[in-house]
Length: 472
Ligand code: BG6
Image (cartoon, rainbow, N blue to C red):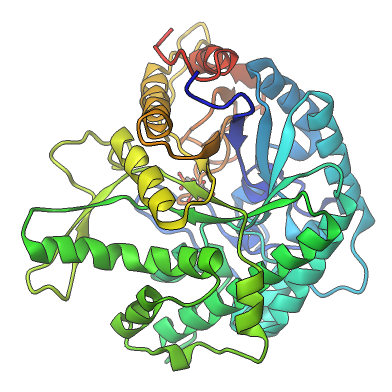
């Protein structure tokens, strides 16, 4: 067998993209709750509060809040051994800095975790997946402010204590490296730039505060349960030099640096030479990182137990002068999906190798998948052979990394095992699931669940521990 016997198989989701019930049982607003739906190529509008009559996809999601039993039943039928989900932070602390946690919110996750465990599925939990309490954004400017570190630590301590015996695998911030990669990192940090702010400096400050918060969470978690495995989570953008021109090879390095900036600090416990070099490329120095007494020691003590990452596609990088770089998704060797994302399974094998070579930590592929438009046949069946082909080729690439390259991979959870809201556009039509959800981009539909062809394919993949990935 290629993969270890205890390999974790499942699917990955986030609360804001599936739970709905956005005001139920005392939940406060998150940054996702004021983000409107949009379309491919049209940015999502962000409001300061909920506007009556506007459509916000997170408000209903796919109503997992009320249908989790039915959904977990279907995951179990596929043979999941784990399920990645996030805790919706303002369900626990509605304003982020409340004196007491919200018991109804805590009880909801007890019910979900119990249901999963009863089906032999272990929860894998993201602590912050685009669900920062909106009140913290308004009161403190979000992760610009160190106050967020205390709020996050308190939230973590609360859920670590409560679910001490129900959850082993945790991760702190979803795709934390997108803080630097995005023009305005709203999802990751809740930050929208103010006029005249130095954007790079704000990103560096917010990142440092999140690094400290993550290290604190690791330290607190390990005290509460030494068996906890607490990871970081990054988006891994496998990048090729456009040509063998040395400047293009350098461009590739420059494009990867902002990503290793995050994994270096969280896995090695300090700002490395690469981090300093990245700061210089942003017009800053290490002096601009807002260190406070004790931070350096904490970062060192709070390194992560494993690296979780998402992988969707690869890019190419080039440079004419060895300084400024151009990054493109177009690659003549690769096909693209309906949203122009290149399809590159080998890029996953490369990602696994690059991360393992650099950190020698266990790796968990916690997101990978194909967003596609599914058209049900007249009889209602959905023949998503394209999804089967995509996932099968990526799982094969993962097995090569394990088998041929001896990389330590502990699990694979593909993105959106059930159709959920797209983060990029707020659409429903960008579907990743094995399970179809009857809902459209305007929020209309019965929300009924239906198994697609890929459902039965994934069931066989899991039953054979990944040995059989061929199409049905
Ligand atoms: C990742 C996020 O970036 O990509 C998920 O962690 C997101 O939350 C996924 O859903 C796919 O992106 P999209 O825009 O297709 O939903």
